[in-house]
Length: 299
Picture 1 (cartoon, rainbow, N blue to C red):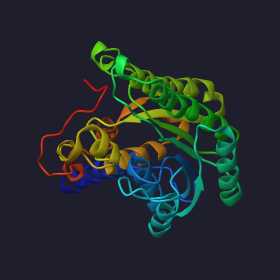
Picture 2 (cartoon, rainbow, N blue to C red):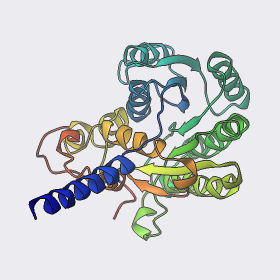
Picture 3 (cartoon, rainbow, N blue to C red):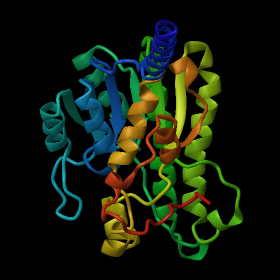
């Protein structure tokens, strides 16, 4: 009897181990090339650093070549950090409002690393103004960067993504939530961000035949970035926020999945981590134990 019980326990242990290995059998990101917009600081930089830690190559397409004291960081300082983190990186000055700059950034990145496997559409402009206070310049900036820029960056990367055996597009934009409260007070910004999310969903269907995954990712809570500190809620809101690392980890888990099995989603960071069995999120809080502020577009 003891021998039979031992075999049963061994079989159970083997089954559990096999299931665990299967669930954790992620695709390696080593030597994969990531093209990411707006990665000289904030969320974009955090995602790029996380990918660099996995041994990925990073193409930083952003405008900052001289440091702004209020924002910090340049494409060059960011590239140095990513190489210290374990990856290879190139910084290319790029304003995604201009197609020729987009194409140059893509060409320089491909020349350096041989291709593009992952695209992160992170660059974005924000102005939370009501209709009567929104200027044509503010409206155009949000739509030129968030919508038009994202579209043409993706278009430029598609030929290279089609050649990759592990192609992902990730757009930093929210679930399309039709609750009227998410339109009231900042219609122009909502339109710009929702357009990004609709493009992400459209690309999932359009490029399914090419096995290119396309998803959107958005935080459950506000994230401590320069935008939060300088434009939205200052130090008080920053202390009620999480660090960009939570989105970086969520992006890592998304990119680690086979493209054919992970596409067409409007992801929330907490939900991505929960599927990986990560529910203790205390380490991501700027102030441990502080009450967190729910982000826009999340009920």
